[in-house]
Image (cartoon, rainbow, N blue to C red):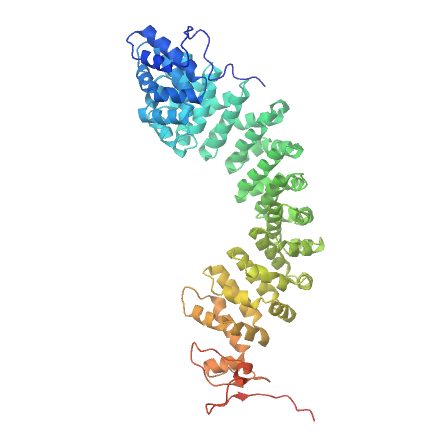
Length: 611
C-alpha cells in the first residue's frame, strides 16, 4: 500500500520518443509537419505535439485552434503501429480539456479508440487509448457510443492488463460508464465482477478505490449482488474491513456491503457465514465518523424491508445504533436517529430502542444543530406511535418540556414531529394534563399559521386531541388560534382539510368557541365543503352539525328549526330566518341598529331578577 501507479498518465513512457527540439513558440510548424507523407516526419511531429500539449491547458487550446486533432485523427488508422501509438498519446494527453473533448465527440473518435484496445496492440496504445476514453466517458453521449460500439468488452478485458496505468484508466472508464443503468446490466453480463475483485489486490490505492467505487455502483442491482456473493466478494470486502492497514479502503468497502444489506438473500448469506456479526463488530469499535454515518445510512435503507429488519434485530443492530447517539459528530447522530426511525417498524426493535434510546434522543432535542433536532424528534415520533409504553418513557424521562421547546424549531419537519409526539403522549391522561399545563394550545397557534402542509396537518390533529378540555379551548380562543384554524378549512390539501374539520368538530363543544368559529366564517366554509363531493369528508358534516348545535340562535335562524335534543338556554335569540350568504349578526351588532317596523327580535333572558 501507499505506492503510486508506476507512472503518471501524462508522463511519456521511456524509449518511446527520440528527442526532437521544436520550440513551444512554433507549434504551428509541428502541425504542418502532420501533412507530410514521410512516416519519420509524422512521428517527430507527434513527439513535439505531445511535449507541447503536456505543458498545460493553454497549449492544448492552441493546438486545437491550429487544427491538430483533425490531422491526428487520420493517424489513428495508420498502418504504422508507431504512428498510431504516437497519435493516441497526443489524444490521451489532450482529452482532459473540455473543448478538446467536444471536438473529439464531433470527430466521432470513440470507434477508432476502441479498435486500439485489441489484445495485439502495444501496451502504450492501451494506456493512452483508455486514458482518452476515460476523459470522454464523463459525457452521456460518449457513454452511449462506447456501449453501442462494443467498448465494454475490451475495457473489462484490460482490467487484467499487467500494466497498472492501463488497469487504472480502464476501471475509471468503466466506473463512469456504469453510472448509466444500461451499462450496469451489460458489464454484469460480461462478467466484470471477478476482474474488479482482482483489482482489490492491487498494490496501488487509486486502482483499489476505483474498483470499489465501481462495485458500489453496480451492486445497487440485485443480480449483481448475487454474483458478488457467488464470487466470494462479500468475504473479500469483510477481510478488507478487518485489515487495519487497509483503513483507507474501509469507507468504500462498507458502501458496497451497505448495498448488499438491502437484499434479503445476500443478507442471509452474510448472516449464515457469520459475516453480519463480523461486520457489526467492526462497526461497533470504529470511531471514524464517515464509517459510522455510512453504516447507519445503509441500515436505514435496508430496514425498509420487513424480513431484513428481522435479521438486523436478531443480530442486535439496536446496540450499535444506540451507541452512535453518543458520537461526537452531528452527522453520525442524524444518521443514527434516522436508522432508529426505520427500525421502529419492527415491534421488537421499537421496544428495545425505546427504553435506552428515548432518554438519549430527548437530550438531542437541545442540540444547536437543527438537523440533529429534527432527526431525533422524528425518531421519537416513530418510537411513540402506537406504543403507550414508549410514550410513558418520554414523559418519565422529562421529554415534555424539550418537545414544547421544539415547537419553535427552524425546520418544519422538527415542528411537525414534535407536535406528533406530544399528540401521541396526549392519549395518556397524566401526560395530557402536563402538556396542557405547559400551554400547548397557545404554542400551537404558531404552527397553525405555517405554510407547510405537514405542520398544518399535525397542528390541526393536535387541536383535536387536546380540544376536548374546556380550559384548553379557552386558551386556544385567548391565543387567537380560532382564526388560523378556520383558514385551514380552505386548504387544498385533503389531510389538512380533514384534520381541520376534525379540530373544529372537537373545539366547537362549547358555545363560546362555536360562536367564535361561526363569526370567523367557519360555518359558511363547511357548508361549501359539504356541497362538494370531492372536498367533503366524514368530519366536515359532523363539524357543521356541532357548530350549529352549540350556537342555537344561528342554527334556528339558518335552518328555521331546532332538533329535539337541542336545549334553549339563557341568551338564545330569534332574529328571524336569514337568507343564504347573509351575515348572521350578534346581539351586540343588532342592538346598534335603528328600530324598524320589521320582525321583532326575541331574546331569552331566564336569569332571576334580584330584588
